[in-house]
Image 1 (cartoon, chains in turn blue, green):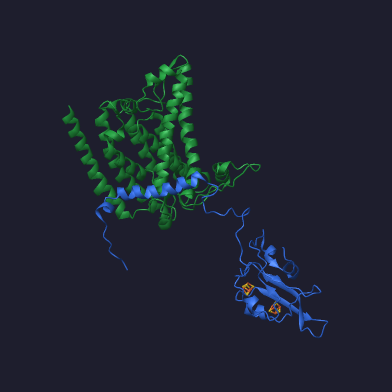
Image 2: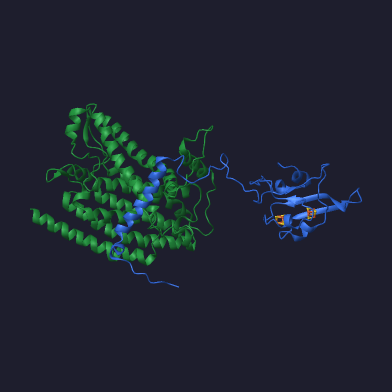
Length: 157
Length: 354
Ligand code: SF4
Ligand code: SF4
C-alpha cells in the first residue's frame, strides 16, 4: 500500500533536511569520537563477554552419574525428536539390570544442529543439557564439530 | 637541474598527497561510519600486537588485494577489461597537477610556485580530465560481458553526463567573479577582502554555486546518495562487478582519489585554497622563512581538503540512495535551472557593482 504523505515547504526544499541529517550523524560521530572507549555500544567480544543467561542454549553436554558413567539410558528419545537428525546413538546392554541400556557411542553433529533444545526437553532422565554456556562452536574442519561421548561429557572442549 | 628537482619534488608531493589521503580515507570511511552508527569499526589488524587504532587495515587490504586472483570472465574483452581500471584511476592524479597547494614562495633561494603545473586553462583542464574517468567506468562495465555491469555502466554514463552540465555551468559563475581560468589566480584572488573585512572566498561570492558544485561533484564521484552505478542492492556492484584483485582495488582507490580531488577543487574554488583568512603571504613571509611559509600553506590547504573529505563521507553515511527518476529530476529540473539562474544573478550583480 502506498501512502501519500505531503511534505511541508521546508522539507520540499530538501537542503534544510539534508543539513538536519548531517547534524544528526555528525553529532553521533563527535559524541563517539570524544570517548571512543566508552560511548560506542560495541561489545569487544573476545576480551569482553556478554552475560549469558542460565537458560540460554549453548553447546550440549552429557550428565554423569555419581560413578562417572553417562546418565543417558540410550532410549533414543532425543535422536527421534531431533528435527535436524543430528544425534546418532549406538545403544548397548548395561551390566546393571536396573538400568535399561547405555550409549556405546553418542555423537552430535554440530554442523547440522539448529540449537532448538528439543533433545533436552525429550530426555526422560535429564541426561543431556545445553547449559554449558559455550558460545563459540568453531573448528577448522567439519570433523572438529562432530562431538562424541567423551567430548560431550567433559564440560570444556 | 634545480628546476627539474623542484618539479620532481612537487610531483611527488601532489601524488603522495592523493595516494596517501585516498588510502587513509578507506580507513576513515569505515571508522567514521562506525562512529556515526555508534559502533567501533575495524581496529583489529595488528603487527606484533600493535594495533594503531586500525590504521593497519588499509595495508592489510592492499596486501589482500594484491594476493587475490585476477579474474577475467569468459567472453569479456580482455584488453579493454584490463585497461579500464587504469583509465578510471589516473585522471584523479592528473587533475591534482593543476591544483595549487601554496603561493609562489622564495624557498632556499629559489622562486618556487607551489603547483605542479601552472597552466593557463587550469580549471578547464580539471573538468576535462575528470570526465575521462567516465570512460574507465563505462569501458569496464561494457567489457565485462555481464548485464549488471552493463547496467551500471549505462547508469554511470547517463548520471555523469547529466551532472557534468551543472558542474560546468557552476564553474562559469566562479569564472565571472574571479575573471580567470587559471586556478592559481583564482586562489590568489580569494585572498582579497570584500567590503574590507570579509575574505573574498568563493563560498561568500557564490554561495548557491558552492552548494550546486558540491552536489554535482558528489554525483560525479558516484557515492551515496548518487551511487546508482554501483547500487549493490539493485545491480550487485554495477560496473566493477566482474573485477577482482588489484583491478578492483584500482576502482576502489579511484573512488577515494576522486573524493580527494573534489575536495581539492572545492577548497581551491570556494574555500580559498591555501589562503588563511586576513593573513596574506607577505605578512607570513615577514614573520617566517620561506620553507616554513610553504609548510604552513600546504598545511592549511590540507586541513581544508581533509575537512571537505570528512563532509563528503558524512553525507555518504547520512543520505539514502536516490531513485533513478529522482536523480534525473534533481539533475535536469532542479540543479540545471538553478545553475543557469545563478549565472544570470552573478552577471547582474557584477554589472550593478561596476
Ligand atoms: S538442539 Fe535440536 S537440533 Fe540440536 S541436537 Fe538437540 S534436538 Fe537436535
Ligand atoms: S533422550 Fe536422554 S536418555 Fe534418551 S538417548 Fe537421549 S540423552 Fe540418552
